[in-house]
Amino acid sequence: MPETAEFRADTRAWLQENCPPGARGPGLIPWGSRKVDLPKDSRVWLENMAAKGWTVPTWPKAYGGAELDSAQYLILLEELQRINARSPLIGRGVNYIGPTILEFGTDEQKARWLPGMARGDGGWCMGYSEPGAGSDLASLSTKAERDGDRYIINGRKTWTSEAMHGDYIFVLVRTDPTAPKHDGISLILVDMDQPGVQVRPIRLISGDSPFNETLFENATANANDIIGPVNQGWSVGKRLLQYERSTHAGINISGTQGRVADAPLPEVFSDLLPTEDDSSRVLDPDQRADLLKWQMRWRAFELTQRRAIEEAQARSPGFTSSVVKLIGTRLKQERDELHLGALGFNGLGWESEEIPKEALKHTRSWLQNKSLTIAGGTAEIQLNIIAKRVLGLPD
Image 1 (cartoon, rainbow, N blue to C red):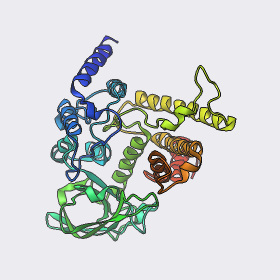
Image 2 (image 1 turned 135 degrees about the vertical axis):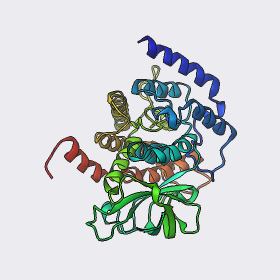
Image 3 (image 1 turned 180 degrees about the horizontal axis):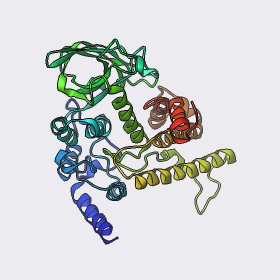
């Protein structure tokens, strides 16, 4: 279509002129936190894309978006990938709570919260899981009690990603302790910059501490910052999880995705893949077969991602996001295992001057990525959703 071709040409020209060199290739992708300093080029890239409405391309213009349709959105992703540009903005603001506010929020809530998210003005965290309520999230015990025009919140959340740098957090709380466990729950927005919110890092086996415990001790939140009806937050919270899964799956057209697929083969495989001059650079035939099988499965996954984006008729994700999320995370873990096998002894190092730094970095990445089939809903939860909601199997 002429309109599509024109949009692609305009997009390509604009990106070439407005994407700084320092925003191309690997590097920091902002998630909006005011507590994290951005390199100059990353800051300029964020400002340029926010002014264009392309940090949240499909959102309404009134809230900082560009109102792109799914075809235009896919073109934007392809053109970003063509110049190896990083996404200007990611995170739980534009990808999780922002689309949820678009769907369930009042006009006042949309006008108050969404433009700031589109600009990257404040990093958002997710307050769902608790020490006694993980997969059985409806058993949550964090309470919010009404006190005039505000709520007083007490309780504890765990596995709160990046809470140490968070500015805001959306929290599932119990607003009616007498109701059955799936009822009496509300989703509320909380400013983390207050004495009543404390963050404690959790150290992982990888050596990093991206997760935290978040404690609420008489923390306060505005009563008009409950998203959706009071005591009906279970439905709202489940909808938000679909946005989360679609983001993990790489098919989120409700916020900002950055690129259609992102699981490149590590550089170590450049010395292992066959070439026109040498078809046996991988000496182990089993290793070569496993690598080629992985490449074929990943290519099929990329095509499935593309089809899911093209078929989307609205900004809201469907239950098929669980399929793409599950397969994508498993493929990334398989890639890590292939990489580990290719590195041999060097792939098992933790601290050593004799092992290359990139190999040591991979060991930590390999361990970190074990969490991919837990984060955003475990593999078992995704399989249950697929069985019930996609295949229509009985409970």
